[in-house]
Amino acid sequence: MYKAKLGNADLSHADLTGADLRAGNLKGANLTGANMKASNLKEANLVNAALDNGNLEGSQLQEADFSGASLKNASLSNTVLEKTNLSKADLSGAKLNRAWLQEMSLSGVNLTGADLSKTELQEVDLNGANLTDVDMTKVILKDTRIDGAICAA
View 1 (cartoon, one colour):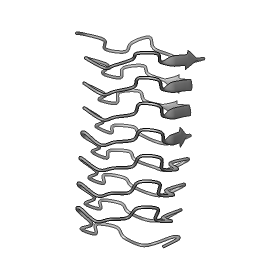
View 2: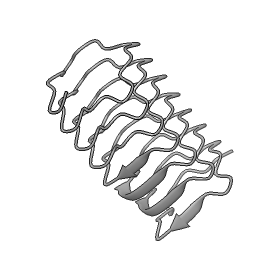
View 3: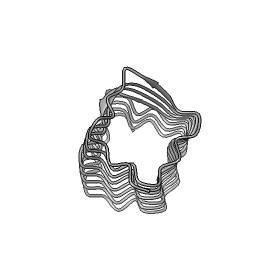
View 4: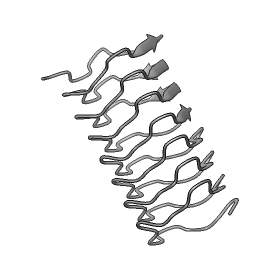
């Protein structure tokens, strides 16, 4: 499904395990509860998509655009997020443990209650991100900006 055109599609609870959705247009798609484990979403457009409770474990998310997307309680464990756009995304309660985030901005992103344990953040901007109740056990921070982050308990 390389370069698939699935904008505004209802793919809620779909099984897309291992799908090749590189450079696909999923803008505004409903992927609530979808299983997208080990999928390739490099350079995909997921602007304003709904991915709440979705499973993206082990997926390739480099240079994908998730701006304005809802990823509440989604599982992004063991994912690669490099130059991924998550501006204004809601990742509250999301599982990002053992993920690798590089060269990206999480400025202003809602991460309330998210699990970032054992995650590596390299050159990530967390300015203004909501880190309330975030599990940051054994997080590795390299050249990461955290000033201005909201860290209330």
